[in-house]
Amino acid sequence: MTQPTNPTVEEGKLKRFPLIAGAVFVAVAWALLNIFEHEYLFRVQELSLWLPTKVFFDERMLVPGGLMTYIACFLTQFFYYPMLGSLIFVGLLFVVQLLTQKIFKIPARWGLLALLPGVLILSCAMEAGYWIFQIKTQGYFYSMLVGFLFTLSTIRLHQIIKGWGRYLWVVAIAAVGYPLFGFYALLALLAIAVLAVVKAEERNIGLALLCLAVAAATPILYYNIYSQTRFARMFTAGMPAFFFEARDLRTWVPYILLYLFPLVIPFIRFDRAASFTIPKDRFILSQGISAVVIVFIVQFFWFRDPNFRAEIKMNHYMERLEWRKILDIAKKQEQTPTRLMVLNRNLALLKLGRAGDEMFHYLDGGEPAASPFEIRLMQVGGKMLYYHYARMNFCYRWCLEDAVEYGWKVDYLKYMVKTSIISGEYDLAQKYINTLKKTLFYKKWAKKYEKFIENPALIAKDREFASILPLYQFEDQLDGDNTLVEIYLLNYFAHTYSDLNTPMFDEAALMCALTLKDIQTFWNCFFRYANSHKADRMPTHYQEAALLYGNLEKNVDISKMPFDKTVKLRFQDFMRFAQKHAVKDVERDPEAKKLFYERFGDTFYYFYFFIRDVKSY
Image 1 (cartoon, rainbow, N blue to C red):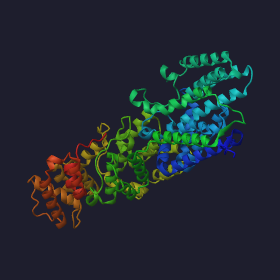
Image 2 (tube, rainbow, N blue to C red; image 1 turned 90 degrees about the vertical axis):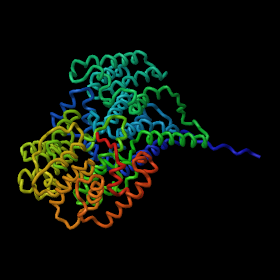
Image 3 (tube, rainbow, N blue to C red; image 1 turned 180 degrees about the vertical axis):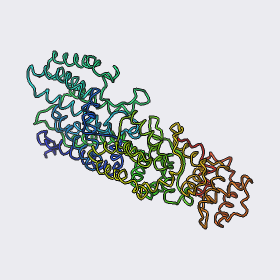
Image 4 (tube, rainbow, N blue to C red; image 1 turned 45 degrees about the horizontal axis):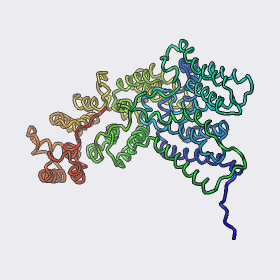
């Protein structure tokens, strides 16, 4: 009786496996980017800029790696159409895989190993999260991909060149590649040195020593040419501008692994014989483990904070004045929101005229940004809030300051156009419009706003400007906000008085007074609101605040105020429940807080007693 043979897989029959694995990887990555990160990708290109001008090109070339940055910014702008931009991105990841497979002669059965650089590059791009608002690396999303492609292409050309031409090629990489691609040229030299030592059939110690010598000397020799780069940065030019501190080590991990890959992989000795066979079950197990590792790496480094995604989506809809969709996002919220989410939601309620009846129907609080770096609300959403609350000078001022700090971006230019138009600075607005008209995808946008300069009478008729002008009633002074957007807006609206009949401004003031929880400020804003709104009924939350404050302090006679019966019954119910559960003793007790939220979470009473110690950065 013959024993059953263990099925095997022959290397020669697996030639297409790497291509299939690569195609599956890029297809899945493309789908994930478009399903979960559509708005994020669009935001990435808004926070970048590429111009087809000599000045823009020359500015990039002032530091080592300038061409890499220029190409990265060019490719980033295609995220204006996220499906197209992500297709280009994953397509280049596929090229990285093919080059990796070819250069390091990775056998087909190890095809998933060739995916590792692309996986790490994807991780580098998607780990940034909130850092996209502050990172000083221009074209950040694409920079590591463009740089690593240069590294691989340089190594491959080195393999094609024969004889003494290789020595000349090494010198060319240093002399020409370093100014254009910075660190990634040095990485190519180090990888060529390793290959020259490790590969017995091509061992060339002299070439390896030359690579090491020019890699060490080139940044030093170029130091006097690049006057805008510190000496320490000469060796890391082109790498992301993260901090080199222990708390930021996690951010560097995918980069370190990516940079180590071409230096370590040559040491792995593969059996490359086409006749090599491997048991089928072992092959399947090894591929399964490799796939799990790839999924783990992507999942671990991919920034997936729900609040961050919600903020990005809110920004997306606010640009389009789709206020109801902002409220839909807030309604679906399952965890404590950030202050930016709360501010966006309240702005949407104000614009829709629903704040008085719905302001406390959503989760509230102040969850800090999920970032290892300090993130300030000003950089994430402050400019947009200032714009929609008609604080034009503040919006313009922070666009200009951040442009100096982090570089010019489409986002800044758009707000500088709109604030200049509302402020009547038409020549200034035209200057920024002329810049945007040079971009690839914002020509139409620029021409739309150019019409307001040509015919200012159209401003008041425009849907966007018409939603802002009612708040643009007072002198737009540029006083101090210390980057504290929320505190500034709260105090500005709550403590700005005028005899003008400004219903939207007065409602904004009353909303701010509720958030401040200052009783005297509330009454001042309450009566202002009552005088400018001649409606038959006072909104529910404003009644709740008046009823609560009238009972806490007897400074205002509320006995004749026409409170709704349901409001009074709810207040009585709350007071009985509070006496039973001793609010002052349980305000920091999660279980008791949960009890109050289940019964009164949609009231001002719950907000007043339980939403505390909120900090806005």
